[in-house]
Length: 377
Image (cartoon, rainbow, N blue to C red; front, side, top):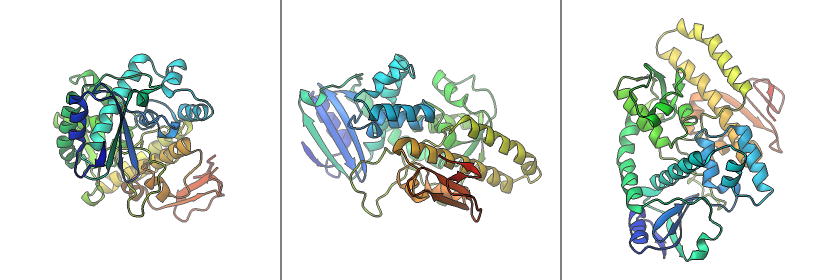
C-alpha cells in the first residue's frame, strides 16, 4: 500500500490500519522529513526510526524538549555510533531516564509526530506489512488509533488559535503568580519560568511537546498567571508545528524548511548560563533607564543571541561539527529565520573542518575558532 498524501490523508490511512488490524510499518515523507510509525494488529507500538542515532526520533525529541543536557547528548551520540545498542536501553541503563519518564517521552513523541503529519496535504506514504517489520522493536507503546486521531484533530484545530496568540519562539513572557491552580503537567511547565523568558527557551526546558507548551502558556495568559512582555512583529511570526531532523535524501532548492518550536532552550554549559546571567545583570540597569519597547527589544536581542549559541552547540552535538553558515543552521530546522533577525547584526565564521567557529557582532574582529572572545571547540 503506497501513494500520495494529496489523495489519501493520514487520518484515512490510520483508520484503515486500525480497522483491518494491520501489522507493519508506515513510512510518511514530505520534502526532507520522514516519519515512521509501527503497528501491531492495528495498535501504534512505536515511532522511532532506528537506522541511525541522528535519525532516531526519540533522540531528537529528548534534544529539543530539555530532557538531557548537551554533554549527555554528545555522550549518547558517540556511544551509539560506535555500538549497536538501543538508545532506550542506554537511557535506562545509565539512569538518564527511569521507566516512567521513558514511557511518557515515547507517548508524547508519538502524538507529536501525528500532529506534525496530520495536516500534510502533500508527500508520500508507504505501508510495509508483516511481522518482520517489527523485528527487534523494543520498548513498545500500546496507543489506540482512534484516541491518537482525536487528539491529532484537536491539535490541528487549536494550533492556528495558539499561533495567533503566541506567534513564535521570540515571544517573551513572564510569570505573574505561582501556578498553584494548574494541573501537575502545566505546573511542571510553568515552574520553568524563572523570570523574563523567551517562549522558545521555555519549550527547550519543558519536557513536553511544543504544542502543549503553547497551549499551557496561552491558558496561563488568559488566567492572568503569565504576562506577555514582548510580541514579535506579525511579519516575523511564521510558525509551523515541530519538524524532525532532515532525512539523508537531497533537499530541493527552495524546499528547505524550518519550524517551531525547536530546541531553543538548551543550556550549552554552566559557563554560558553564568555568562548569560551576568549579561542580564549588567544590562538590566541600562534597560530600566530606557523603559518601553526599545528596552524590551534590546533584552530580546540579547536573549536571541544566547539562544543562537545554544542552537549552534546542539547542531554540533547532532552532527559532530559546527555549521558552515547560519543559513545551514536554519536549513537544518534549528534556529528559525525570525531568531536570526532578532539576533542580528552578527558575524559568523566556521573553521573549514567544522571544529570551531566565531560568532560576534557584525564588524567585530576576533581570532578564528572563538565565540565572543572565547574558544568554541
